[in-house]
Every structure is written in structure tokens, then in C-alpha cells.
Length: 318
Ligand code: FES
Image 1 (cartoon, rainbow, N blue to C red):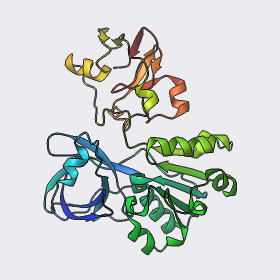
Image 2: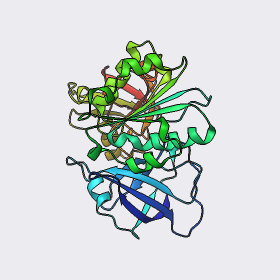
Image 3: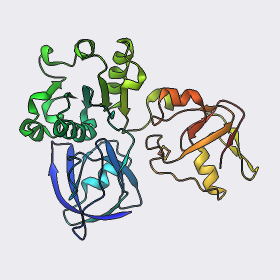
Image 4: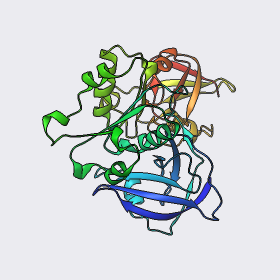
């Protein structure tokens, strides 16, 4: 873990606060790439993931943006209570939402607080001279954070704002956007589940392969995953042969933790991938947003914090 100090806080709009984090001793922070996030250990023992939204070439600070969600499970409330000078422990940056390595045209699609990783992507692409457009959708200008930074960026001409309460001609028109994108463009989307579903469905309908549709979820699992029936099943540990029954009200990770079988977890929502575990036998029921459609279809690994089983037993490579 890295110890950092809250150097500055800034309200980016009524609901979004950005925090600038610097190392305690002034030493450079570990490098990061656009789309990376850090795990932040918050007061009360909570761990939350936040995307880094400053330019990836900076090594003197990390900037995160946090939405004050009315239905917060504690994370955003704890962040919004922080003051300048407070100390925090964070992980080194990890990137589960990286840009395609080739300098292809990038369409960056942000909904609400999902703007944060895309800010870092826009900074990186602009610095590389790579072509991109950033489309930022929000309920209204008052709900959109970082508008001043976007307006003052050297790449401001590549930013397109879409407000639900604005005139019809500025609304996000995904079919038109996709049709006008150069061939082989890659799309990156982050935002609320409904926004992401809309964007990804438009991409699929337009015939874009999944490999060109990059996504990062930042909230709890989409409603359809939550609504799936929950039943008990068995999990076998390959190395020891131990078999555990996973009851309907507990996750695999919780049962294994109680039995002393170590599995690292962080978000416990199927977002971060920390608990990813190889599957040797059985068919998982994937409930995460971390793995891609193709990775789900292979059924050879699963997030044990939230995913369950379609078969009566799973054998895990632990
Ligand atoms: Fe984050 Fe399981 S702990 S995906």
C-alpha cells in the first residue's frame, strides 16, 4: 500500500468532488496508464476503487473524482468527509480498462461520474496526437463534473456535451455517432449501468465486434444480475479436496474466508477482478462486470465474490 495525503479538494459540481493525492514524503508516485484505478482504504475499513483522472504522464499526484451518491454504501460519504491534509492508504494503480495499444481512432463515451477514466484517456490520446472524440452525457450541466477542465483543455474542440435537459440536437445519438466513426475505431464507455447498456447495445447493433467495445463499470451489478434466482451449490478446493456448501445467502468468498481458505477480495461487487479464480470443473454463473463476454463463455475462471454456479458443484483451482 502507498501512503498519501489529501493535498487539495475541489467541487467539480454539486455532487462530484475531486481529490488530489500526493505522496507523504514528496517522492514520485508509481506510474499509471490511462484507464487505471487505485484501491482507496477509507476510514471505517472500507475499500473502494477510484479511477485516476489526471494526465498519466504526471507522477507528482493522483487525482480521483467521487460522486456523492444518495444511496452510498458508505464509500462516497467517507470520501466527501475527507479534509485537506488527511492521510490515506491506497494501492498501486491497476489498469483493467486500458486503451488499445495501436493508435486507432477512439470514441470515449462517458455518463455522469464515468467521465473520470475517460479524462485520463483523453489526456493521453491528446499527448500522443492520436485521434479521439469525447462524448459526455449527464442529466444537466449542473450534474456534470469537470466542465471547466474540459472547456480549458487544449483538446476542448474534441469534447461533445450531451445533457438530458438540453435541446434535441445536442442529445447523444449513438447510431449516428457509430455510423460516422472511422472503420476500426475503438469505443470506451464508463457510466451508469443504463447508459452503458444503451451504448454497448448500439455498438452491437451496428456490428462492432466486442473486442472494439471496451467498458468499465463503477457501480453495483446491473439489475438483471441481481434478480437471478439464488440457490445453494457445492465448491471443491482442488488442492485439498475439501468440499463446501455455498448457501443462498452467502458468496463463495465469504464461505471460503470463514473456512480459512484465502482468496483476495476488494470490491466484492464483481467489478475489480481481485478475486478472480480459475475453475477446473463445473459451470459458473457469472454475475460480474469484470470479465468480457468471451471470457464468461470460456467458463475457466470466475469472480468468487459475487458469481455463483449453474452446475451442482464447481472445482476451483485453489
Ligand atoms: Fe472485486 Fe471480486 S472482489 S471482483
